[in-house]
Length: 84
Image 1 (cartoon, helix red, strand yellow):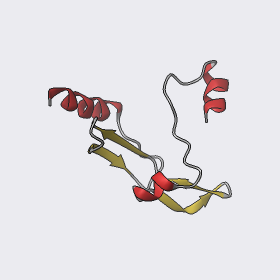
Image 2 (tube, rainbow, N blue to C red):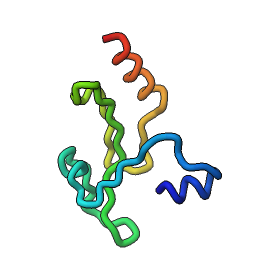
Image 3 (cartoon, rainbow, N blue to C red):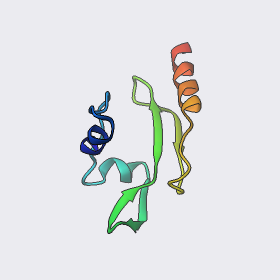
């Protein structure tokens, strides 16, 4: 993914990406898509806002890969963390 982003945008992403080759995190959050995509398994798209204590404060997950979390919703979840 880093290579693809770098190729498409001319620079690597400005944030770390999770590589979950053994599906440990994907399985923990129940995100594994049982259907193959281009011959391999991939997770359902998801976004989690996790506070400093490790508690999930907001999440978005959808089995339809075309439906993604809106930036405004993610930013609002982050703003609510600031208020606490």
